[in-house]
Image (cartoon, rainbow, N blue to C red):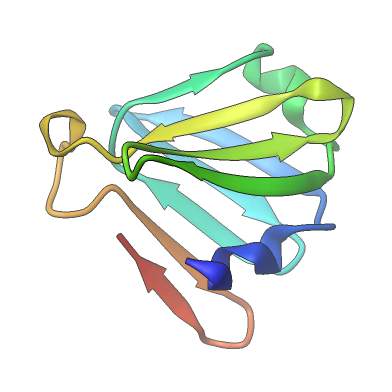
Length: 99
C-alpha cells in the first residue's frame, strides 16, 4: 500500500461523512471510506491538519496520522465493510488505490 504514502505531507482540505461513508479531500487527491472509521478529534478539528504518516496494523486497520496528534483509523476487517471494498483513494494524476 505504498501508494497511499502519497498523502504524506498533504493537508486535509475537507472531511465529511454521509450514509456511513467518509469522504476526505487532500491536496493530491481524495479518499472515500466505506467501512468503520474512528477519529481522535471531532471531524471539524481535523480540517487543515497535515498527514504525517500512514500505518497498517496487522492488515486489520490503516491509520492516517495527522499533525497535532490527530488520527483517522480505517477498519480493514471484512465484517465492517458496507460495500465490496474498505476504501478507494483517487489521486489527481489518475492513480487509484482500492482495498
